[in-house]
Image 1: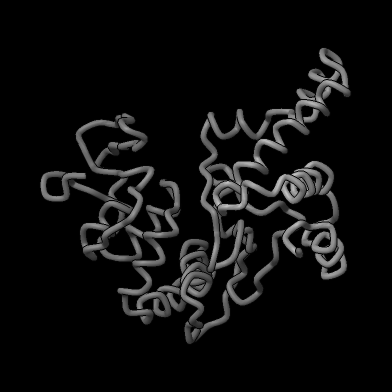
Image 2: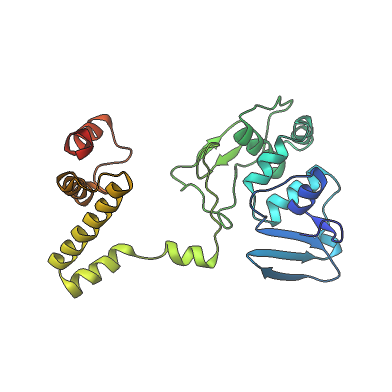
Length: 258
């Protein structure tokens, strides 16, 4: 991203203005140009907007543009919130208590930093999603929580310690639509359950041998066999997360207790 020679807006403007160094590049970068255009190279989409799309100068305008028109980047936001004066967000929320982007920005600040902003006004307006489900994989509606403080629907797909960001790309949607049980059923009809089980046992045993070899214990076939048996019969069993009783039962069957 050439910071000097382009008229960047949104996330790219925030990166350039605040000197933010990202581990992963922005999925979408936006700039102002003579005509509307879009291009993708090496996984990064460059959106060129006409002059009428230029956001207001400063943090509010460009952060709004990022949340509204681009794919929200949590790394960018996390690093940005560590740099800016939080009073800028407090003032924004006070000026626009019903504005969805002021409320989303405030919510995301508190979510990512674990610090609470000293609000001077009560937020108003209809509840809005923290993240756009059309752009990112988010928590299911049943798991989303209404966050009254910001009047934001917390649909974050994780916690501040681990919040995976998965874009709703055509490739991702195709993979998520893959019916794995149907494919397994098709294999069972074609080859039979017995052959599939024998293949699974063989692969599990091979995996067990490789794991023990890495630990320098390849000369213990009995333990390897028990480990492979545990993998074959325990994987996918039990309700997540595993409780203490299930873990104790699994440990009692494990060759690692010897």
